[in-house]
Length: 475
Image (cartoon, rainbow, N blue to C red; front, side, top):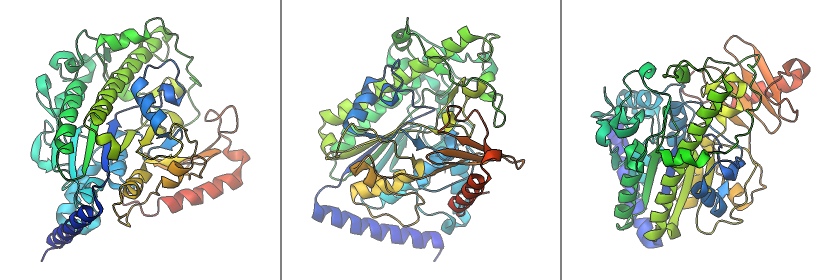
């Protein structure tokens, strides 16, 4: 008997036992996971008072928002690898596909993903939109090949409505009315077209998400529904009514806009788009225009979050559902003279995390306790009663959900380089062997390297970083 078959038999037995237990104990809590691409904490509930984000702010007021949530990687694919598996992974947008390919010949190499774990504990699991790296979770030239699944055995249904955009690859970087990015250089970096929400791809994703909510709530099994919104990912495109929200609004100055001593990159993804010959690094008016379009995309996503939450209440499923809103990483809007992600600074690594559920103690109180994306898997297990698998590498956030003052823990992130963030410091180890230490108790924060002044801190954090990444499956 093959290892893969053995695994399937074991998981089938788990599912039978889980279904029996659920029937005996009454209905289990559902899970609604809302993923938003490239969303830095640019929200009113996280301190950006010029941003129009009433629906996400309402969720924060009813739940627990984590002001210091850090992702494992400042890029979509590897960050979602960790969110979906509860483990450290490879720094590559193909990390989940690499995992799937390895599992074909070495099924023992990777334990079940989070949705697979819930699926085999009696849940119906459904993915809509961009939850893994490819919207819809498939590979192939146009990301619509049913034989190339990004997260095998994870979802009962994995859906990506494409409409005028023809296929998931087209929708991923789509602009209004079916415009597909063929080359970045001929695609405008931002756009604002007149029309309803459905003139951009997220309108269709949200619509399908509402449909799935109604279907899942009508069944007699708990559900795990993940809805992934694409904006504010590049290119920045949203209906004009969302850009109009920022007419006459004064944006705050860009903090620490100077190029750093180390860790800088040339913003290649952003600079590859058509910018009409303009560069926000030396054109303040254009920088402001870019920031307004990013804000419009945030408000566009916020509207969809509001529709999803309203549907949850309408069908009565809010009474037994754990809601998680998660940003897959941050994004530089001029800080450190960068426009994009892919760095190991705060702006790339800090993103919103909000958890809400019936019975939460002290709702609306934000916590400053430091946490990681790695912690989502064990937290959801604790909140739903699904047993923790034992292979997860994060810790449950239930103590912080019960008491917002409870202690957090250092956060580790990586590209080809590595960093660890503690309450006071960030240590970053570069490929060339150089070391950067930043003191967040200093007004300079991540604008001044103080490694030479604190060799004892450097050595201590190097050891912590090595211990945290000791079980990372890839170099």
